[in-house]
Image (cartoon, rainbow, N blue to C red):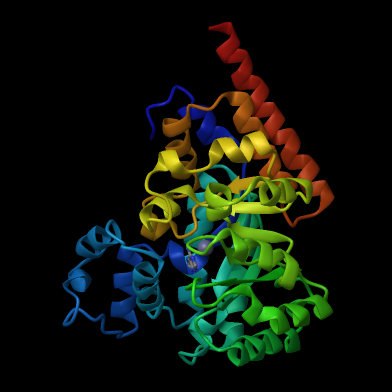
Length: 359
Ligand code: ADE
Ligand code: ZN
C-alpha cells in the first residue's frame, strides 16, 4: 500500500493489463513446491540463492540487467511440467489481478521455453485456456492469450513454433489473440525477425514486440517499420532518449506502449522511478498502459506499479482517468467490452472526484 491519499482510488480503479508474462508470475513458494512435486533439482549446488524461497526472493531484488533476470526466469519456469502446473500458475495470476481490479488482461507466455523441454504446446495452451475460462466465471476478468517467441533462439525455431500453433488452429479459433517477441534484446534486433512477422501478417493476427527496453529508440522504429507491429512492449528507451519525431509518430499512430515501471527500475533500464518518462508520455499524448511484466520477480503486481508512479509523480484523479481509459481503448477485446469497461472507469472516477471535491 502506498502513502498517497489516492491509494484506495488506485486500488478500486478498473484496470486493463497488457504486459504480464504468466511464467513471470511464478512466486518462489510455488516454484519450490512444484520443484518438489515434479522432482526437479534446483541448481543450489552452484547458486546458493536456490536454498529457499526467501533467499531466492532476496536475489530477485538485485538483478544487474535483463539477461541476469532472464537466467533466473528460465530456471524458474523449468518446474512447470504438467497441465495442472500451468493451470495453477495462470489461475493464481488471475486471482491476484482480480483482487487489484484488473478487469481485462492480455497475457504472454513463452511457448519455446516449454516445448524445448519436451512439454507439448497443447499442454501449455489448453491449460492456460482453462484458467482463463475459470477466471472469467469466478472473477469476471476477460482475457486474451498472446504467444511470445524467443529472440535468443534461431529464427527457424520461432518459425517452427509459430507453424505448430497455426497448425493447431489456435490463431483461427481465437485461442491465441496474437504474437509477440521477448527475451534478450540488444544482440537480436528487429531486422532478424521480418520473416516471422510476415507469416503472422499472412495469418491475419495481431502482433507486438518487446523493443526499446534495453535497446535504443531505433529498435522501436524498426519494429514499426520492418515488423509492422501494432503495439510496442516497453519502449521506455524511446521515451527517455528518442527524438520528438519518434514520440510524435507513436502518438499519431495511437500505438499502445505497454510500460512496466517497476521492471524498468529493477532491471536498471532506468536509473530510478523518477527517470520513468511519465510526463513525456502524457504531454505528447502517447497511448500507454501500466503493467507488471514479471510480478513475482520485480516486487509487485499492477497496483504496486500504479502506486510506485503515484508516489513519484503525484498524479491527479483526472491523470489516472486518462491512463486507465487509454489502456482500455488499446485493448484487443471487443468494442462492447471496451465500452463497458470505460463506463466502469467513469463510475469510479466520478465517485472519487466527488469525494475529493467535497473535502
Ligand atoms: N521475458 C520475460 N520478461 C521479459 C522482459 N522484461 N524483457 C524481455 N523478455 C522477457
Ligand atoms: Zn515483458
